[in-house]
Length: 474
Image 1 (cartoon, rainbow, N blue to C red):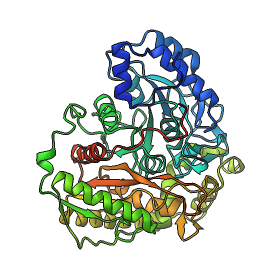
Image 2: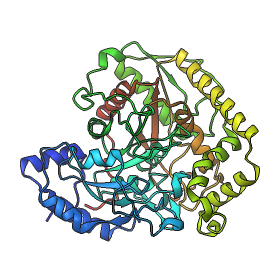
Image 3: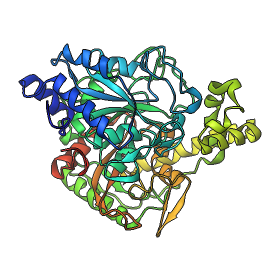
Image 4: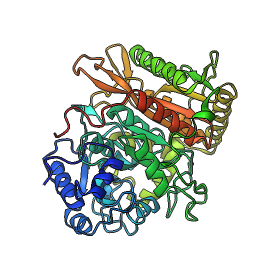
């Protein structure tokens, strides 16, 4: 048996399976042992016996053949818990498997090992719930892993699995990607189908993965992306994401890049984070032959309470008659939001939210009138203490849900592709942790996903990042 799970990227693990240097059974046994020994609290369900059965017959010729994969607990796997990370559904079982997971484990050959913890209903970008407790950041116990895909990010950066599924409705792939030193790609809206039983509104959610390398993301897209009739907004399939990675360099040369660490003042960004983003952005421009442009300054409107309340409509419909008796079982922020929405949400507020969304779309479009690519911070600072939720001052820095969302959320509202990549580490603002990852978003126009991934790959080649946290099992 291997001493630890694979600590390289997923593509190299598949290569090791195919060469005979490692076996799917050996890898799964190491994974299960690491999950059992871990203090990260990033798995809420482990299906050990069925995963072992699959490992014994794994077809390693498939793209993810035999690879142990974590599945975010907001995804559906038939026969597994379907809790939405909430106490109120702690005993519910999924009756079907999501399209993405079905493609991943079917034609992709991946071995789903268990469910990774998420924030309740995906509603917060932190990693603590009443159902599961705190999911810890593998770079420092007691620091947030982000959310809502925090468990997936912690599992991958913590060396338990090499890749895991994620979802992003306001930053829930990119925020934990930035906090955990991973690649977090939010594709153009609809790139990977979200069905079956797709909840259409509010047209901000995409699905994908938490990964250690850009090529791992591309392989995930090769397997899972492409139209499915049960998601009417899913996009046609593009072939060759991994094959064509690195082949768009000529297309990049001469295009314009704007470096906007705080996204035109949308968030309060720690100065040292802004410096790392500027440095990485300038390097990216040099590597790709991009023209740096100044003077891109657009006010991106905040969506305000109207948007937050409107987003609770789907949750209210799902919870139905369980409300208000279930209120004490909900996370405080979710319960408060539901209560306020029930009491104050109105037709006028719904209309106001749509007007603000239109203005947000115009603002982002105006930015791309002047630049082909934008880089900004993924998070305003490094990972804050795991028990922080609403905005809080830590030293000279504002941390918490709203300040984080200001940098990632606009690209969900409008649907642009955006990839978070690691650009270095910094000590925490409170001085308690010596080194925590900093992420930078690379953003472009709709459908320019491959160009975004090529830029991410350029930076990865020039400045390779740690594939796992220093404290991961070795």
